[in-house]
Length: 349
Image: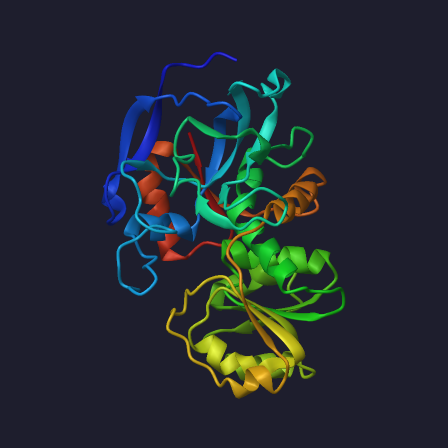
């Protein structure tokens, strides 16, 4: 496959608003030993793009510090964790037969080898990402999905949102027939949680609002409660026996008020803090009911393998809300921040 020497990319050179996203002409990265070079077909946006750009992650002991996902970022940085495309070239030690294959890149940077490794970095944050015509990735993290009937846009929607969702469901040990609560249900992770939980035989009670409620129901939620009204009261009415697993990207007050909704031995899994990171709750509701509070950041390699199996079979079908050309990355991020959409926003390099 012919590869040019330079490419278009969108980078950030500092933390800030959408205005720090700068189009640039840069050298195409050369795949190192054990790596592949992927020609980006589609790259999906995530909340982590906004928070990385803003430096909104804080640091241990200093929650207000400007920081990337796991600490200071090296600038300039090309954003974008979620890439679907085709292998354009391979580095030393990588099978040439991969060239031309359609792939989805696992964007996690892991702390060790093996199927249960923890993500400690992210493409688009700790290494350059997919807001570009090409990106490099470790060969073992470029998953062959050539046979999948999903589009590049749908495949690009999977890694962070669906990987995070599958990680939450696996860590929460959700079983068929259980009742689950999904917060932030119209977002990328929320819709992924509904689709995967439903596919695995759970009963889904989702929290959403206003005009998005119908779309959340269409995604597979059995009951949708309106977050503008008494959420806990509505959930109690929808699930009088209680909740087995809460899959929560909101935290804040929901954690405090919602913990008593758990059944005996219930699990509350947190993978975000859209409603505020400074949560408090009544500890008695945790230990007296043998409940578990579980933190979940992204996925393990084993979780991602499960996700790619679903993608090859098209067992899940991501909803695409909008697509923008690469040079409109700032506009796309503004659209994401407004939260007026349902589904994923993608860029086309």
